[in-house]
Amino acid sequence: MPRLLPLALLAAAALPAQPATVAPAPAWVAMVDAQHQSEVEVSRSGASTGTFKRDRVGFELIHEGPDHAVDLEAYAYDNAMGGPLAADPERAYGDTRDILVSGFVQTGLADGDRLQLIGAVEFAAEDGVDLADGLRWGVGGAHRWRRDGEWDVAVGLMVQDRFEMGPLPIPYLRAIWEPAPAVRVEFRGTGLQNGVFSRWYVTDDKATALDLSVAYETLTFRLADAPAGPRAVAIGEVPIRLGLTQFLEPSGTWFARIAIAHNAFHRQSFRRDGDTTAVFQADGSTTLTFRLGARF
Image (cartoon, rainbow, N blue to C red; front, side):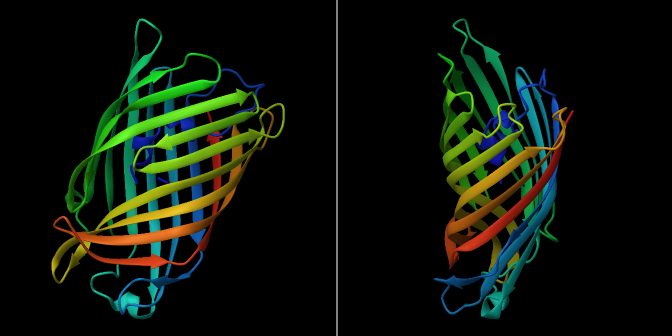
């Protein structure tokens, strides 16, 4: 993920497991991470055969309170294309960067339910593109309720701005099921991220957690103009991801996470003036992510 990823999630869902011996939960979480995606052959790209790979470095900073959360993400992507694809004026592009500020506020209702206002502002563009050309937004709301100790559900509607396309209304669904203290399963259906995300706390103190997820995830960037005019790329992929999160000391401050994913599907669509002008798909690839963070 992510991107407008936190627009589709409550920020609390992104937080790592915390040892049960630590209370209260810290208000801040800071993380740095690096991601490497293996080089793969592209297909369904007309005459532009070739290869594609992507690496990423960046950081994330989250502040969470009882009735709000704010999430700042900043990532730089190193995109490498090889073969004829690298010279294709409609499909080739260089390095990109993504800066996102998102969050939510919520207010209580008489029956204990919550109404949420969720929003985000994002700058996502190829290097060299003006800031104003790479800005987009998202806004929406949801009704959140928790009737028993197992289910936490939010249902609503989002409106997402899209590069080279009109704004799109997106149904919002997020349901967390916790059938046991050591198990958490989350269902997301937002248009931006759709899938199942599960977590198992391996140890009683919740210092070690295993994650397994299958989802459709997206990235979108404004690209430098091609000979025919302005354009953008929308990336959709289906990673099957297994991750391990480990707190590094008893206080529950420092943690590390490593995750490996197999991308079962990867497609890039290039758009201009509301139309898809070019596409390419990539064979299955492997993505490795390492993250180091702290709660304070």
